[in-house]
Amino acid sequence: MKAALDSGARYQTETSVAMIDLARFKSVNEKYGHTEGDRLLRQIVERWAVVRTHGVDIYRIGGDEFAVVLNGSDAEQAMHTVIKTMRAALIEPFILGDQNTRIDMSAGLTVAPRDGTTADVLAANADLAVLTSKIEKGKTCTYSSELRKLALQRHEIAQDLLAARPDRDFVLAYQPIVDLRTGAIVKVEVLLRWQHPTRGLLMPADFIDVLCGLDQSRSVGRWVLDTACQQIAHWNKRFGMDLVVSVNAFPLQVATFDFILDVQSALYRSGLPVGCLEIEVTENITLQEGSLNLKVLKQLSEMFVAISLDDFGTGFASLNSVTQIEVQTLKIDRSFVFGLRPGDPRIEVLKAMQRMTKGLGIRTVVEGIEHKAVADIVRKIGFDCGQGYYWSRPVDPRSFAGLLEAECASAVQFG
Image (cartoon, rainbow, N blue to C red; front, side, top):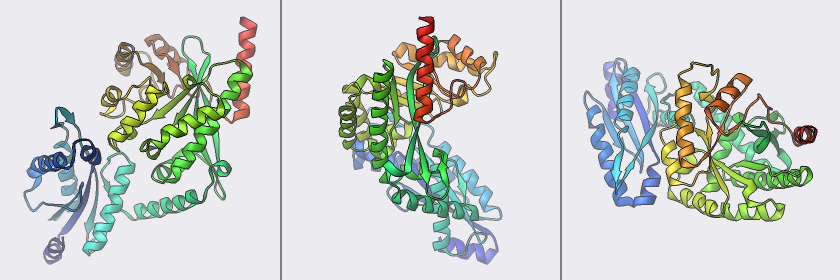
C-alpha cells in the first residue's frame, strides 16, 4: 500500500483502498474443513484475476479478508467498478463436496489524499466502511466522516446496552397474526423495545443491529423467551385459546446448544405447550455462522418447536434455508405487498410463492398488510395468515389483552 501511496503522491493521482470481507466463509471451514476452505479461496482468487490489470493489486490480509489497491485520476469510481466486477465473479456457485456453495462479500473503500495519507489511516477507514457494508447487507460503502460519527454512536449504544438489565430496561410489545380466512387472532409476534435511561423508549431500528453483535443478546433473548412464554400461557388460560407465540432469536443464541436448554426451560416454567411456541429466525442466522446453527434448529424441530423463516423473498439464500431446516412457517416480506393493487406484477410472484409453500406443506404469514384491499388480495391468493397495521400495531400487554377480550366477546355474540 505504501508504494501505491508514494506513486499517487508523486504523480498527484488518487489512491483507493478497499477492504473485502467474504460472507459465510467461516461456515465452509466448519462444514468441509480447512483444506476445502483453502481450495475455495484459490477458486475465488482465480475468478478475481479478471480485475488484476491496469494497476489493480489484491492482497489477502486474513482468513477471509482481502485488500484491493489502485491508483488513478478517478480512483474512487474505478474502485467501484472493480468491486462490482469482483462481486459479479461470485454469483455462480462454487462446488464443494457434492453441493453448490454461494459466497457473497462486503466491501468498504476509502481514497487518498482526501480521507488520509498514511496506510494505517486508510486501512482503518476502509475497515470502518466494510463494517458498515456488513450492517447494510453487503452494500458497497465509501468512507466518510459521517461513518466515523455513526461508528461512535454505535459504540455508545453498545456501552449502554452492556449496562442494561433485561428485566429492568427492556419491554415487550405484542402484534397479532390473524387467520386470513376467519380474521381470528391465531398467533402473536413478540417485539423488543428498549427503555433507554436518557433517550426514552427506543424501537428496534435504533439498537437491534448493535445488540445482535453483543454477548448481551443471549441474556436479553433468554428474558424475551421466558417473558413471552409466561404471557401467552396466561392469556391462553384466561381466554381459553391456543395462541402461538412467535419469538425472534438472536444470531448468538442460535450459535450454541444452550439455546435448546433455554427453550426447554422457558416452556417448563411457563407451562406453555410446545406446540404454542414458534422460533423466528432470519436467513443470516441459518447460514452465516455455519453448520452448528442448522443442528440447533433441527434439534428444536425434533422437539416439535416450530421454526419460522422471516423476510422470505429478500435474499438468494431463502430456498436454500427452507431445504436445510424443517421450516414450518414462511413470513413473506412486506416489500411484496406494500402498495399492492390489482394488476400489480408482484401478484404473480406471490401466487408462485403460495403454490410452492403449499406444495411443501409450509404455512405462510404475509407481513406488512396495512389496508383491507391488500388483505383481500393475499386472502384470495390463498395465503394462510396476515400481519400488519390493518389489524393492529404492536401494543403493550394490557392493550393486547383488550384485543383478545373483544375477539372473545365477538365469538360469543356470533357463536
